[in-house]
Image (cartoon, rainbow, N blue to C red):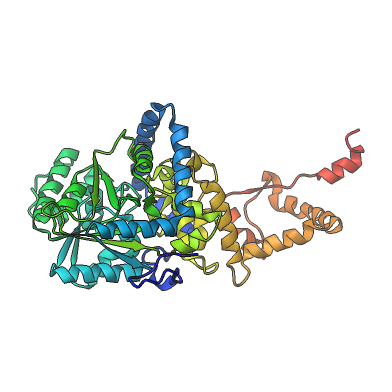
Length: 500
């Protein structure tokens, strides 16, 4: 399969390098991290209120469109077409960007992407950049790479600024500071923002104006901007960023040099295809009919906007996902975050518990797919289990990604990755041995009497003796096991003659 390449003219796909995955692999398993987050009652209140508001707004604007399902089907079909023709469309995009004065770079992984961007910034002589909110730069850990090179990266999206000033990490794809309330934001601004009014209130407008004054100086002095891209139109070489604050427009027009880091899956073939997504994305993400700011640019225009444009196309595991005929649907994601806002698991634990820049249902699928799962101890091995499989994420997804099915697939991949059997593996193997023989199953049924003894008068088993306690600890640690019935179905059948 042809694929992403570097600046040489080699058209073969490079081998994905796990060493350069950036911020995709966490350090703590989801169950352990979730326990910590669940103990934060303020976090749960913040998340519940914010996701509830977004869900209600989305439901209202979606209900206005009689052809919403047709739009979803169209979006899904366009993305499927893009995945089927991705190498061809990437070549077309490169040709058109180059023809219009831009320069295209190809990055195999996060490490290479960060190196390319750092070298481009250094070449301008700048020691700071302003940034448009970008999941791709978070994925690669670009800010940290620039800092290590002595280059300051200033986030200009309000929520990203809050996260950056709070020495925090994002908790949501669209609203990175969703886990903070306005009182907490005020404290961050008073502590970290120079020249802020000590009498600053927690009124949302006052907070926004303080951020605006802080950022305006950065916008007017910056010589280099770094952005992501929501979409790229292959047949014209046009890039598009949609946002709601105007900071993106400032970054994309004022600096002399613009560097865009974009995942290779963000393509659409034509402008008419882009029209579909400009209806789907705002309704699904912010509950708006259209984005307040939709910025598009095509290469370089003399005397207008940046006079030097670089597009860095990022693979970082996407080629491996594309090679999976079923799993490639995960690359259809347009980063709207609708699945996070309806997920009962995300609403209670927030994004930090997932240990990756991509939280929520899509993150529980996409992160292990991009990185692979190295074994039972890999923190990403637990992500596919961070779901109730209720299906709400599929219903909300504007491009109809069957996330529940992908989660089940990744659970299977997690089990297959085990280099040594876990307690759960042993339990499942024991169950398979018992259930594949009528005689062994009958013998296992006779052992149910022990369970009734453990349940006692309460009729509940609250703990199990060793070695069963090792296998069932995840279950009994959170819930009781009902006592086994006094009579099995087999015994009832034999006693009653089949109910006759």
